[in-house]
Length: 491
Image (cartoon, rainbow, N blue to C red; front, side, top):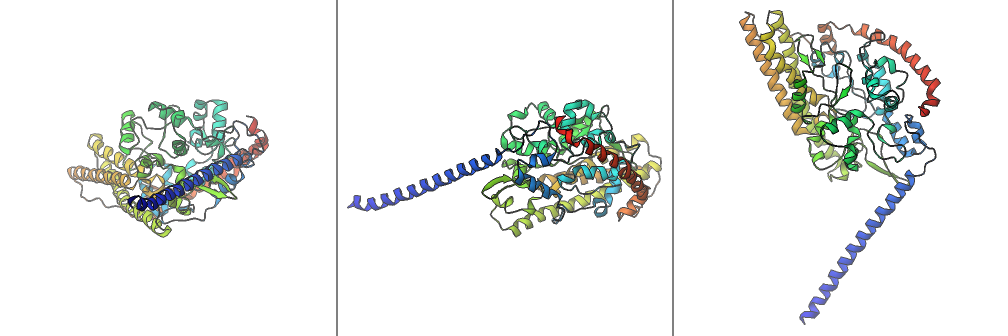
């Protein structure tokens, strides 16, 4: 009797196990078929790609879906609460930045970067180039803008590439960021084409070929979306990762070699300008801890016509939440956007406090110098200002308004505010000793125009100088590039 009761139960167990096995086998088979289809699509080579081919349209003949999606980086219509692809004039939105970068080209012109297809065009047109004949920029500034860069580096040598003027390579660097920056033309495997990343990893005891494919899906982005500096003597590009990826570690690195980007016009502080440490901030966040790559969110997989491919419209995940966020998160699209914006709102709130404190510190430091403060008086003040602004910029210069690691972003901004206010306190002590009244009367810098006027920036003259470049030099670059375009693949 007992055995008869057990038999139906045993039959059900066998049935359920069979269903699970069949289902798993079906999923496994479908996965194999999908990968075969994906591989077959990749291998339908209609045109052989030379080793250093910089033209994205040539690659697009073999990979039309990737090419079509890449062209969508030209779309500037998407806006989120704090970003997107639409133009944002950061100096207009946050006029304190004009003061923070006094004496540096960013106080003249600073807009949100557009899609990769605009990389060359936008660096040609920014007012930060400094005009035609006397542009101070080294050719190193082209490093992240074009697949022509590794081609020219291979031809001329890395050091030779860095140790030239930006204006000297304008006719060479003509194709915007694209395929050859990240892919081996023979195997299509992800590859690193910029020496800065390879050298930084080797100093940390790691070889690029030791990283997994998933890690490479972030490292190809880390070729450019990182903090870096140019050596003073030869403009050689270096990633300051020797002590670690954090803001504190890189700050210690820079202090150790006594590096500075410029001397602040008001406070006379030897300043650091953060570039865009997206990879470093990401490394401190939960997505990196869970082995989620940059490409998982910014270049999610798509399926069209039965073909699986990577979406090369590299952009905010908020533009395509279904394929990016909802692969892992089960919340609704509205809820996910709400969560992202809530975190960004908090980062912006604290960041704005830091910006206002820093702007005041620079202006008050000028007042101390004008009152007769000595270098010995100001030494601790300048160190605090340098560190405070570096920490603010480490968060502000990164994309995603801190979302890559909100907790770390808020921690670093908190230390920025602490150091800025300490600097202001020391300045008040100095002014009091010098018999000056406190607090210092701060100027009206509530708009970009007012802040630039306070610094003596003639923006119309800056635009006029830049127009000379657009009308003469760029036209010459384009004509020479057209004449040579058909032979670029043979370099």
